[in-house]
Length: 181
Image (tube, rainbow, N blue to C red; front, side):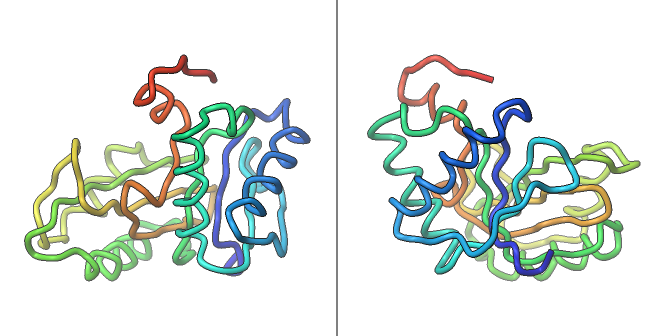
């Protein structure tokens, strides 16, 4: 999984439409797809894009803000800096390493999507954030986000800004268009 640097969620019944949307948006954002696979979790693509996945997602997000109709079959877009086993110890170590990118005066939060893991999301977030002592936690307006996507036995993790991830429904609300699921 280490070669995948982007995760995109979609409705499992619309995999074909979602894949076409991903390919089109990545290309329009200046990237190309080296590999696109359905993950072990229904409704999640694991993608290897050429170039900077964070910049590609940022470009797609900017286009979406101008035209919310550009994303109709995909929901969340998250660049991945690194993959680790989905154990508390390995994820905590990775979170601490990612937190080195948070400045002392910066606000931050952890954003987690968890699929097929024994612990609750709350338990995992508490375990992973407890040892981080940099910056200040701010769940409303963070400067940085430690993003965690748990897919069964593996977790994709990254340190991003709000502009480097996409939650299509949240963006729809910001621009005043209806949400879809």
